[in-house]
Length: 275
Image (cartoon, rainbow, N blue to C red):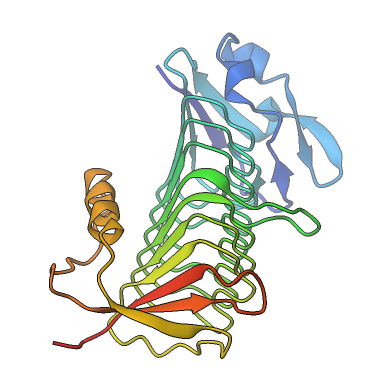
């Protein structure tokens, strides 16, 4: 049986639910859970006043359903288990999570998976700005795990990413993979401006053939071909029910190296329509 949270009334103010940690809730009854405070704006309120709470977390699963767009920090710091959001999620979804799985059937706000260390987040809609990125002032963004976005992603996707996999079926905004240190970003659409700016290592793979995004002059064309890791990643994503376009083995990719203003060992790999 899962522990289910459903808002009693339409939510107007942001509500920080970081206190609703799965590890803490797994041994509590709905009555006990209802006494845990959440922050509504700038004041604590027992979550039983906000949510109708049913079931239990004996199966290590939390479910948020209904109007959840104002809920901040769902699954932040998650270590194990599963969280399902049946609708939209608010800011900081799965931020700094260390394990487990989060599934969102709608959209997610800014900073989804920010600085996540492990686990998997799958968003069936769009993600806002800063997904998988470092918070301002932090040296490292995502350092492990998988962030899968079925729609589009906003600006700053994977900024200062250190490890892990980010995959986006749609387009991404400006500064995708900026200051990237390592890891992999796969984009089925095309990124915005300043893609890979300041990246030291890591790979950004663009699967839209001949995508017309502005590539900085600090990247140089190093090779044309198809790196073997591409098919490995695509098979892995298909096994997770996150299929991306089929890429025939004979397809060609332009491989750009940069950013030459930093270490210059990063790669932006772009599918071409060359025969």
